[in-house]
Length: 180
Image 1 (cartoon, rainbow, N blue to C red):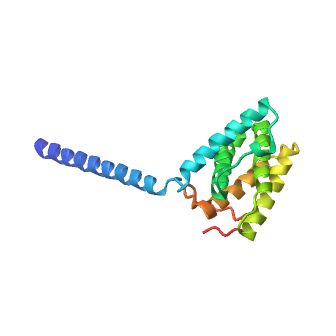
Image 2: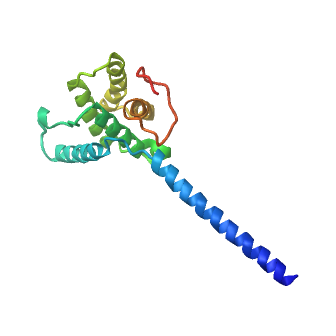
Image 3: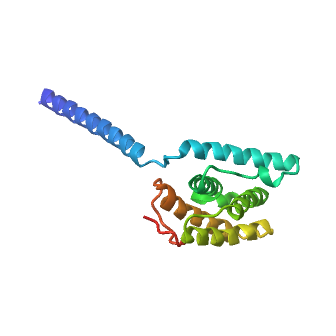
């Protein structure tokens, strides 16, 4: 009887290891397919670096109009804006304190880009004008967290609509641009 129990336990252990291994493999494959890798991830990364360099430089010198944030296209702009708000507000990050000076600097760069850009669709143009209202309030010194959260929700939904962002599937329903 002891030998029978040992062989059963061994078989159960082997099955558990196989199931755990298959689960891990399956999870990593699903994560790879549904990750937030956008087709334009390389351009997004470059634009994020440029944005950081611009805001750091603006602390030291007077920036000219031409030295503002200039992403390659609107999709890259939306992705960079969404990533910024994910980093500063996502998953409750805003509850630990908000760097309002940084929020103002970035809002200035984002609204400057929006003001200089003609958007291809009327709905996207309307969304950019709407989100600018919240960023303008931040620029004007408002420390109302709702302005930041609402801007984040706009860029989140726009990132889904324009870039097929899929790392988080919640849609806030704040944009006129249809979210697929």
